[in-house]
Length: 132
Image 1 (cartoon, helix red, strand yellow):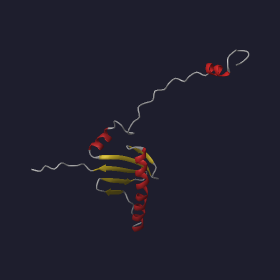
Image 2: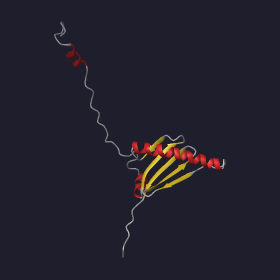
Image 3: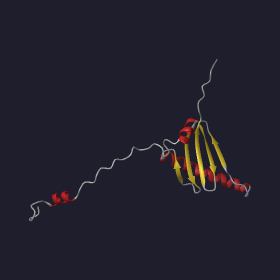
């Protein structure tokens, strides 16, 4: 306790420090493009993810989670640059512009531009067969 005021120093600190007003946080968004008509139409047509990279391979925008984006980029970026080198080794005047990878469950489309790389992940839609 302080001899002059009769209050302890912690009580003096409590009086001088005012509580900051509570800031309401916005609800977390699942995707960075929620409500975008293009993304909604893309998902309706069997699309799963869109990832936009700069020409160095650093993700700029993505419709998927950061973890899934990192996984796709870390696996596909070396493959894309190796494919680009193979095409240049075969013909130095040529460059790869589009690459498509197909598996049993989906497709990955990659487009290389001068400034951006676009990766589109598409899942296959299951068609119902009519057995008549």
